[in-house]
Amino acid sequence: MSKFKSKELKVGAMVVIAFALLYVGLRFLKGINFFSSSRTYYAVYENVDGLVASNPVMVNGLNVGMVSHIDIMHDEGNKLKVELLIKNDVAIGPKTVAELSSNGLLGSKVINLNIEPNITQPLEDGSRVLSMADKPFTALVADQAAPLVEKLDKLMTDFQGSGAEAKNMMHSFTKTSSSVDSLIVANQVKITQLVGNLAQTTYLLNRSLADLQPTLENLNKLSTDMAKTDLSKTVEALDKNLASLQAVLDNVNNGNGSMGKLMKDEQLYNNVNHTVQSMDSLLMDLKAHPKRYVHFSVFGKKDKAPKEVKSAVDTEAAE
Image (cartoon, rainbow, N blue to C red):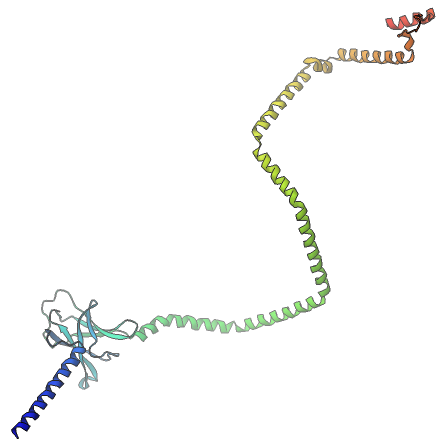
């Protein structure tokens, strides 16, 4: 009988130990370390907005503790009491604020401790800290989207106001389109002829451009040759020739040289003119009476001209 009782005690003790280990393991998985030194504080919120036990407690982004338990305070209007398990080396002052906020876009909650500097009298273990709840993520989105919604509402109002104008414009556009279609149908033959003439003109223009291509190539070659030519020397030589011609013209105008004297000296001009006239008369007489000036005979016979003729010839020669 005693052996049977001893076995029951052993089984009961093992069950108790198993439950104790399970409890400790579950708490450990939640982040509670029974072997570390920590202190407990609590904050009161009207709405924890999804905060659960084991959510972190942060100070400037550093994890310094966790939410250990959340209770409902029935005697204070069903407010929520959140127990905070904080490391022993973190000093909490009377002005410290436990701010409930969102951790990222996924909506997980976190307690941010805003600790005042220069704490002289830290709060004791189990004290209440000030609390503040941040706006929910949906409320923040709603605040940011409110101006956009207002602008969209105004835009829709303006669009509804301009609906009649848009309808009239579409009606006018439809009417204009019908008129254009009728005009195209009425002038279909002319449009076809115009397109044909345009195609023929384009063909002739292409042929003209093809015929013009060699000329353009020659012009290009000529411009290239002219670019290679030393135009400065050519211009310089032309300038010298013009200067020489100008000097000659100046001499002529001043009466220098033969040409200048001939143009400026009237007596010399008259003498030259008289000489030319005399030579012209002599040539005409030589052509009319060649025997007076040339004596030719096969037998060496002299031409016995009458004395009066000889005297006339001598007189003309003397003149």
